[in-house]
Length: 170
Image (cartoon, one colour):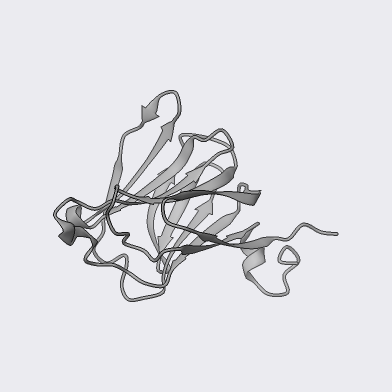
């Protein structure tokens, strides 16, 4: 029996989820939020909604931090041994509009392509290698999330898995 080329997951807020199959090079992850909390930053305490892709060793291969109060999407990596690297920042405005928001991540051999609502938002050069084995979804302690809870995630083996009837999409 063939291994499925597509999986569906619900990732609850403030949890780490282990994927049944790792997302390898050419794989795709699509986060879907059925609500947006544009007022997350009104708490006066700041706001940080975090989506992380982790390898099997627990290193954060890609860290995406949505920071409404800074009008920023921040990208980074972190290893258990060396900590955080330099941040890469993209302006938040214009990336998330309306409901049913998506964040798609295409796992290139040397970079992650981050696509928000169908448009490339950023190319993030890989600093940590390996397959994506876990996902995490957190906010700063006690603060509301920018995205829905839980957030839905679909993982695909490759682009062909997105096309009904394709050979890899079996």
